[in-house]
Length: 306
Image (cartoon, rainbow, N blue to C red; front, side, top):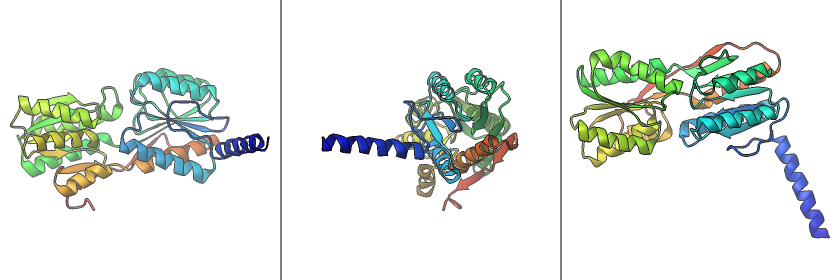
């Protein structure tokens, strides 16, 4: 009987602790979102960039003393829609969304707005819907900076390959636009293919590109995971090819220091997550927020990687 009583008390304490922490969960399972809480639907946490974004959001939620529930779509837009519907059923006050596909989530985001839920898009936009706030890096500018670095370092006309991100993701679209705005006139683009922001796919796609175009001189990858995969394929082939990525993840910065990558574009994922929650709290308090909040980007090379 004493053991049973102790177990009941322990379970009660655990439940109280969960409520006190805002019921934050990482994954697509049951959540503890309630009225006045914030829901964050992230495209994937199988990427260091978005792990850091979530950490920024969690830190800001803790500072503000508000509930935050995190759900991970695993780069599956169908799951993301289902996750958001589940959050809405739990009466969240603000939805923060990092879309898997900027078009495919528009319907469920509109449903959220129609239900009176405030919506913030972070890192990627939601197409066709007027959300309350969008917080993102200037992906077009960042890709232009990365591509111009290739031109400045290797000269015009060199043969370059592009590893594209997930089709439909606004970040992938914008980074592709920035790349081609420079590359189409100053470089020779010999290959362009998606590797879905994934390191393993980046390596596989790069292997195929090298077989078809063994004289590639540079690679622009729309994120660091693909860039790191490309660097592995290049090293395995015994070639020296300039690799430029995007995000400035810890692994990418190490690769730049070691000479496996040449450059990357630094975003500030912690700040993206932090700012999204800070602005969500403003919306919950009835305050106005700026419709578009840019976060600065910068070129990272061996000269400033420290």
